[in-house]
Amino acid sequence: MSSVNKIQGHTARKRFGQNFLVAQNVIKSIIDAIAAKDGETIIEIGPGLGALTEPLLQRIPHLHVVEIDRDLIARLRSRYPPERLTIHQGDALEFDFGSIKRSGQLKIIGNLPYNISSPLLFHLVKFAPIVAEMHFMLQKEVVDRMVASPGTKNFGRLSVMLQYRYHMECLFIVPPESFDPAPKVESAIVRMIPRRSSSSVGVGNTGRPQGRKCPGEGTPSPQALDEARFAEIVLAAFSQRRKMLRNTLRGHLTDTELTALSIDPMARAEDIGVADYVRLSNYLDVRHTAESARKK
Image (cartoon, rainbow, N blue to C red):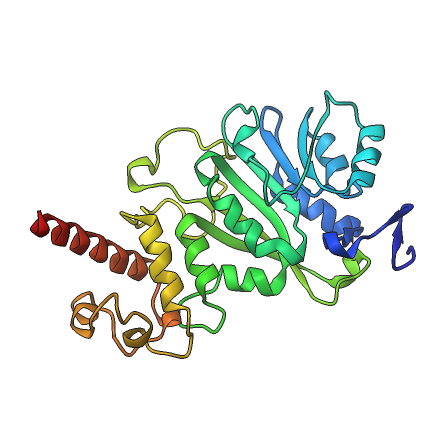
């Protein structure tokens, strides 16, 4: 094993959250899960030293990568010709994934820097309509929150906002010794498949291998009439986790309205599910429309 800070001649930079995957058995498992095929448009976020890049390019003729580290970019350019590897230099938090020329929908993968994982996941939400599926390495604690069920301690704002957009599944756990330098926490691989509206279930080509599903996929997803209002209600509900909804949503809904919507006013934010938040949001949208009409 190499030194703590130097891997293949490259010094891992803490400000970029660099922990390089080196365990070959884990790399193989990730590549098998991605199941890349010729003709797919695949983007890797943070290719690093190429642990996933190399085996992916053994399966497909071309790959896009988004990398911020100039030293790593120079290594990639010296190793792969542009007709095999298109390098997008910059911060993934600001990158426009919709700008990539594609045939069909995108597949996005990556060993995401743990220090920016949550904001990056929220950034990627806006590109969900053009994505077939995503596979990410993340801190296990974050994945636990992403896939958590209502009524559990891990269920929070991140759970609601991502479960509204994606079917998600934790595929397997990755121990710290799989990296160099080794992080202090366990990691996990998560598969994220964008939810489609009820009108699109079973319609069209998703760009995904047949039989590839996450738990619950294929059932119509609840749709918020106003997604900004939906996000506002979720944020308000989880603003004070230990308080009851009758308190956190005061100013939005009365106890009578909550009860009429089959929501216990004494429940806490983590006690109700995604469909419940959609129902609350849609009720507020309809109420607002009715109030506006009466004022005219």
